[in-house]
Length: 460
Image (cartoon, rainbow, N blue to C red; front, side):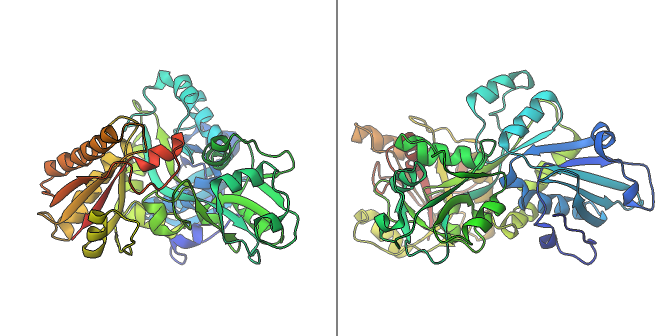
């Protein structure tokens, strides 16, 4: 349902129940937002249109839109249904008394890329990276994998949820895959009560489902059981799971609600809950990035303003308020464990780890699009905390390949790549180290190896 509120009396947080797909339109000055064009007329007069992921749209996007409008001096922000499920209209008044509106259409990641292709959207919201076939189909627009097109706006944890009274506290990725494939049918097989298992899953249009399929099902050679009940909305799925003792489902981190989120293990990792710190570092096995994709060669001023706001400190503060994990940097203290390499034990005993990791493709020391922005964030953080000289330590890791020496070398080369970029910003690090395939945070699957190829940042 829609939420209506005046910007003068309602905080941005009050807008978080709105869903996505954004469509800003301008109209002639009037004293009533009800006179704003609707339907096809609104589409024709659009100056910014965003379609796609329900994960991005249910809470995060409306809050970011509200923040942008407030930053531009708009007032009387209101949200109302737009005539279809998961579509809403956001309206506001500018300083001259002229109304603008945003139409919300959050029908799944795939619909965003379709909108970019047919010209009905200026931005595609996605809860997974663009697929090779999608990028190829949009090649006429330019390189959709370039930094100009691909914008990581937040980090999300894909939470596996059960009824609050379920005794099971953690599962391995393999067990989750077998559950959703229908191979485990009673909770007693996992140490729970004698209770039949009910499966609840997102629909095929959902980026949440695409991520689950890639990180859980495909990696174990499984497919979703035909008995699973499917949902277009994360929140609707979570509400159902929280009310049914035998239920299990998966949702974005912001939609856990009153359900119970399980800890997850992958390969040799310890059980990891979808906590803010573990999701921020992307170490949590089912963490994922949330994206906006733009036309890399042609962007309106509204598009540029919106993307700049999303990446700003104010925009990332809204990400945090929305229930997702912001890309802001903060320190965390890790307990020393005897299973850690000796050098890592010393580091954990003397320094704090920062909630930023740099990750790399196989055999590469090239920073990806998120890492390039994170370098700037890290430089700003170190400058703000007077840690420019000899305070930061970079620790590189690799995936467990057949050639341990090559893995160790690549892990150090990746740390050196981060050091080189920091030096361009006037930062002199204290030390670098490469620990090769030590301390994996994921299995040795394709997706797991990407998580294991990382550079951590520690601060004295």
